Image 1: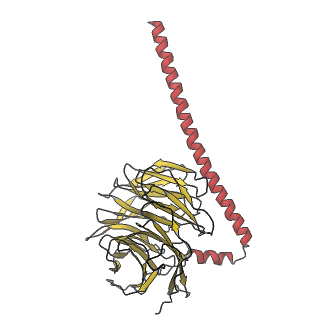
Image 2: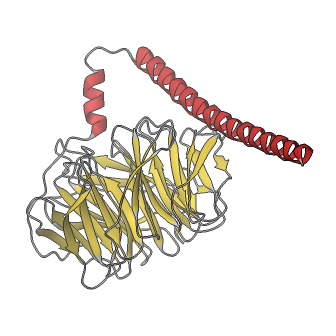
Image 3: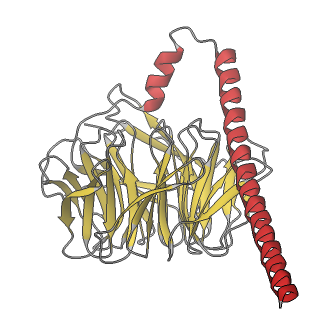
Length: 413
């Protein structure tokens, strides 16, 4: 197999954070990128040229994780200040906040239907919440050290979590039971996620490796030892054939999961690469690092099965030569089992749109959905304020009653 590679070209430069970029995510319509940083800010970057980025201030400490809702009309952020915030990604920067844990919140993730959130924390727990009103549903408590990451499976029936206790646990969402534990012997997993097919998980480990497990047989399928530093993050391409990883060795790696080998090494960040994510369609990927930079790059898949991939820089921090540096290499893996292929969401959507939905109508519907989502969030904010007002009014009435009783007793005396 040969892989086509296009020359990288620098188009835009994303810089707005004042400290390490910890997390990055794309909206479903590819119009926005959300990032979180140790500087305690959430940034929303608009993909259209000449459009301003939105800076959201509200967290009192480092933002560790950000995630767009499936509709793209909400952004969740998790922070070292022990809270989670839900933002409307617009200029008004409206948000609701709730205290999710008793320690740093390391991870936040929307379910596929957008109705629930899962959070992971240094308090050793995983918690599940409703998106509307942020109602606590249940917690998962078997980890014995900090929980770094928790993700829903594509069908929302399972949750996978990784912890400093050197385990990766698979949970049944309905029974709330741990159905299997994968053990890390040399290190622990910083980050874990499901393959788009839902049959496998991949883990980014502090032992500098990336492991892929089958969740049905519980066997390790692939083991990539391609980095010379801690692996901080990873992301599956929506087609399921590729995996991109981010490491403290200042590189990203593109892995071919079908062939079981390393395709490309990407250089560009000046220091550890702390986060990376493919867009929902797989057309782009974005990364962030300790150099305070956000790098947004474009992928070019040339065959029907996404077996060939090219990469060109779309908006990024450049290296010393002013461009994104790319090289091909080979990888080590324990097994060469191929992973299942998966149709990317964007491809399915484009096929659906070819079925006769006019682009104008689709845009109108998208706008209506966005307005409804914003309206729902506004109602939620008003409900919270109303509840607060009711609580204060109740407290005032109780104080008045106590004063009245006190006066009555004084008169009787």
